[in-house]
Image (cartoon, rainbow, N blue to C red; front, side, top):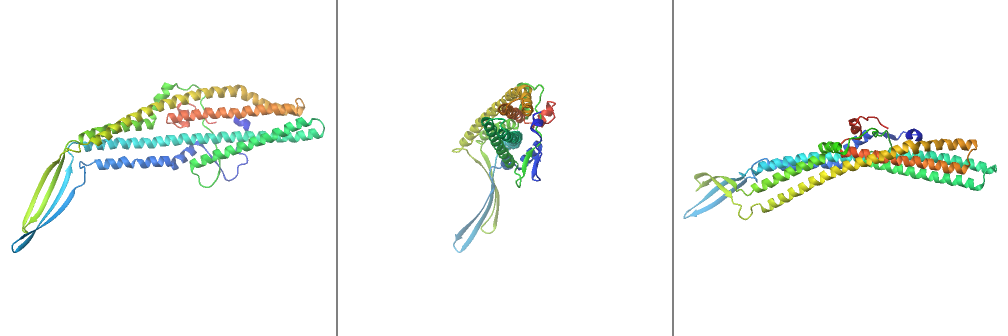
Length: 417
């Protein structure tokens, strides 16, 4: 009803006007988001870690060549030797490190999904800011045009001697104030459009306009426990923290296994005295006497503690996100219902009645200014209440890792407003 009251926003749009839906805006934001691109690039770190840990060789093979000159009375000969040496892990720590890297790959993939969730939320908030700013600007401009017509009417009445200067000045002041509010509202619209324009990374400088907003459900909404269950199953940051803790636990296991000596195998070939050919091998062990993985175990233990703390923080944040968004939604919906049922209807009636009453001479010009100003202020305040309600609904959808449309369909409320 309030959107019909404000009027169609598409009137007077130029050729450079771009009308965009929330779904299109979200899709575009995800395609060009630097945060999402950075999260996708971060996956290469654990992938490289897993590629290195795949083989049971802690380092690369060492190839060496030696040449020795032997001199005896009347003769000089050269001995040559080639060797290839490779360390081999026999503790199985490479298997554990490979598994840990696999868990980190899963965590990185979930962080990509979480970056997308945050981008969707941010885009929906910016889209809402622009949608509300457009409607406030349309209302303020409509009010300013009426106030300016009223000021012209007051001047004619003053010239005819039907009103005094005080009433004329009141109408003129109200027209100036209304036009000032309209200009500020238009500036807010342009600022909101600039923020959404930045988020979408659009080329050129089109006049960006919004389309419909997802409907806010009017029926019952599940309680916090049900919504927390949905969030617990869907939130990618929670899964990422869980995978991170698993990887950290396996890092600790791998660090403990690193104290087991490593096997060293060497293949030897050479020629002695220019004629004798040598073939052989050597086997040895690296003894962890001075360096037995103290730093590695310390870092792994600290990493596991940090991962556990991160998981706890994510769990608490998830619960707070859902409970806070749900509480704001219920409060904002109650406020919006009160406005829609009581305040908004009375304000709409007063806007129409004051114009009729002034034409018929039933009220003074000053009364028209006061009554209409109160009615318009109520309509503008309603838009603020409507924005709070929709923002809470968007926040709840983001807390559940759902788009507003998907959450509406889940609750059987697919219509737009």
